[in-house]
Length: 531
Image (cartoon, rainbow, N blue to C red; front, side):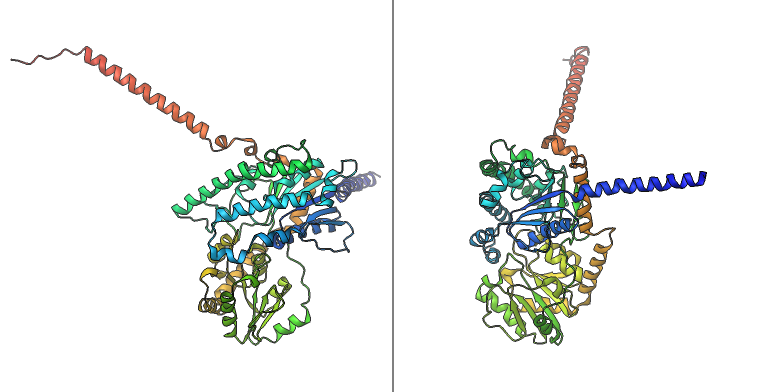
């Protein structure tokens, strides 16, 4: 009888624990999530889309404001606000392919992007469906958590305040210095340069000077130009009750960053930072028949050539285009898949196949792919590393120089400068990455290191989102640095105090020694010289 009672108590405890866990699951599954992702860049959006889709498949009800909607009606609990009109705004303002030839400075690029972000803010917040969402009160609409693209468009911080919901910042690349500020993460320009700088974690003196300068310039421009400008825009749409955007900037519960300790520089992170690498990688799918046949018919293998979503191959000059065509013509045993945005490619040879879009991940999975010519975009690099494909990287702007520097350091590919590219340089680089087995060995080793972790990036994103939902926020994971003035964080007040005390002590010592010396002189008899 006693054993039976103990058994009943045991199973009772088990059922109670299961009941409590199920209670948590039900609460999590009932959550409504809003994602606001204003930047018109496919490489950005595929990261956010992957996370939002994963949360929807996990059971959450997801609403997304996106520039690149996936339009998948099979997911019933996934609603999209289409703001893809921003791509026309981007293409009208920027010709990324020509930036390299014009040698635009890093500061100028970032300044132009932030300036363009003002136009995005006005365009998206005044877009009728989005404006209607803003006008709803909490009884008509509510969200349990708000994801915000971090950190180009602080104007959309207002959504978290509007719906009184915890905020998670998410970025498709490593955070800017001002992004780290929002959760009290340290800025470390001595060995962790900003992602827009082409430096490693072992910088020369002049590189460290530029690293510090760029960080300080970025902070000044963000806090004294970007925030005030976008605050005025946000206030027109969210109303004057909206707190100052500079104050909302320090309110996220967590930051989800697309980075890792293997490819990028190891550096400390506070617990409020979650690292997501390769979160956008999809399950394998069969290739379209025409692409599969083109690959199968390649005598020696395939070269995949794509400059990403923002750099348009068809906008390069005829001279530059001919360099690639001439190089590919000298490699008849290799077939080339070239992402080309126009209907036809003048001078196209028989071993080249063009398309406005290719299923890139599935192409790179094919064992006949020998090299990937690309622009240094982080998501494309992650896809190539995952499949063990050596790279030829041609950086153009933003974080691409930084990423390509890591490609060179890890010896998984070769860098080419677009402004100085020639047929001979391109052929030399292709020969090296295809025939020198060390490149493929290095990239396969890097993939093994990245794969050796206890959970996938998607599992990590879902778990921490649920954590924020369960606890109605996670500001307890941020450091006190969030609330400190910069001079306190850098201990300048303490250093000044120690300096003043030291100077005071030295002055007192000097005065004391001088007084003693004079006293001794007064009491010392003077010797008279003999005449």
